[in-house]
Length: 536
Image 1 (tube, rainbow, N blue to C red):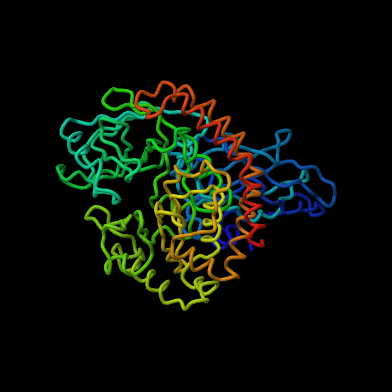
Image 2 (image 1 turned 90 degrees about the vertical axis):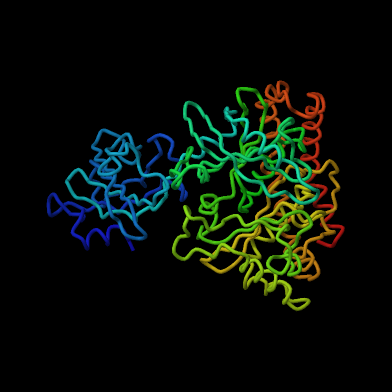
C-alpha cells in the first residue's frame, strides 16, 4: 500500500493522472532506490535520491520525473517540504536536493528539518504525456548533523573555559574512594567549538578508579549544554552542538594506543549491538593544550533513538562489582552501585508514556532474573530481556577480551535500558578502554556476572553464545580492523607525540599500537581454537 499516496489522495492532493493521448501507455510505477537506511545525514543538501529504471509498455521514452518529500507526523503527511520537476535531457532517475526547491517551513529554515520523519515519493512521465502512479513512499529521518562530530578522519578542537571557582569545585570531586565512582556535580563554564560559543554549560570530570584524574593531570570530562545552572533563574535554553547536548571526552590513560574504544565500538555496531560512535579531539582548557582525547557519543535519549524503537525508557549504569541481583540493586541494595541516567527535574519534564525515573524498574529486573528457576534462563529470560541482543553483546565482549566489562572480572562498565515499546531490557557495554587484552589466548569462558553465569550454565544458551562468538570472530576478520588501526594510528600519531599530559612516552604508545595490531591479527584463530576446545 502506498501510504503517502493514499493519504494525500484522500485529501485531494497530488493525485496521479494519466494525461496525454488515450492510446498512450502509462509507465510502470517506479521504486525509490535511494536514500537507503532510516537515518540520513543532515550535513549539506546533497544526499542522493534515485529511482528504478524507467519502463513503458509501448516503448515511449522517459520525458520527465517528479519527486516530492513530505514532513510526517506519525504516519500522516503534514507538509510538502521539497519538490523537483526534471525534464529530458536531464538525468531523470537520479537527483540531489540541489535539483529541487525547498518549500514551506523547510524553505524558511534553509534545509529539511533535522531529526524529523519524512517520506519521499517519485513518479515518471512518458514522452506521450502519461504519468505513472506514485511510488511506494520511502520513509526516513533526517539526522541531526552529529556525524560531523564523529568523523573518524578528522581531529577537531574543543575549548573549555573553566573559571577558578568551578575549577576548584570540579577538582575536589575528581577522585573518590576506590572502587566506587564519587557523586559529581556539574559546574559552570564555557564551551567553544569552531566559532560557536556556549556559555553556562555544565562541566565535570569523569572516570572510575582506573581513569579518574585530578585537574593537575589528564582528567576526562563530561560537558552538558542542557545543564540547569542553579545560579541562573529559569530553565536553560534548548541548545545543541551538531545535534548533541552532551560531550564525553575520555582521557585514554588506560589505553596508550588511543585506539581501543574506536575499534571495539566499531565491531559492536557492525555486529548490530547498540554502541556509541567515537572520534578524537584536541582539548584546550583555559587556553592551555591538554592533548588528545577520545570523544565518545553520550548515552542519552538521542543515542537511544538510534538503536531502539522507543527512547522513552529508563536506563541505569552499573558500577564496579555491582551486578543485577536484588541485594545490590536499589532500593533493596545500596545506591552506591548504580546511577540513574535520567532523573526528573523541574526543567526536564518527562514525556507522556516515559518510564518512571526512579529505582522501581531496576528492582523489578533484578527480581525477575533471580526468580528464574535453575535451567530455565534460555529462552524464558526472553520474556523480559532481549536475549538476542544480550548474546550478541556478550559475544563481542568475549572476542575483544574486555576483562573490565559486564560479563568478566569486575562486572563493570555497563548500562541496562528498558525499552517500553516491547517491555524488554537491553545490555549496553561501555568503558571498553581495557579491551583487546594483550594476551590473544584470553579465556572468555570463566564469567562473573549473573546473566553470563546463568546463560553458560545451560547447554542451549551456551551453544547459542558460542555460535555468536564464532560470528563475531568472523566479522572481526572481515572488517580488517588491523588495517583500520594502522590508518587511525597515522591520523592521531602527531597528536599523541605532542600531547603534554599523556602518561606514557611516545615509544610506549607506539609499542601499544603494534601490540594491538598483532593481537587483532591473531585473535580470530585464538577464538576459534577456544570454541573447538569446548566442543563448539
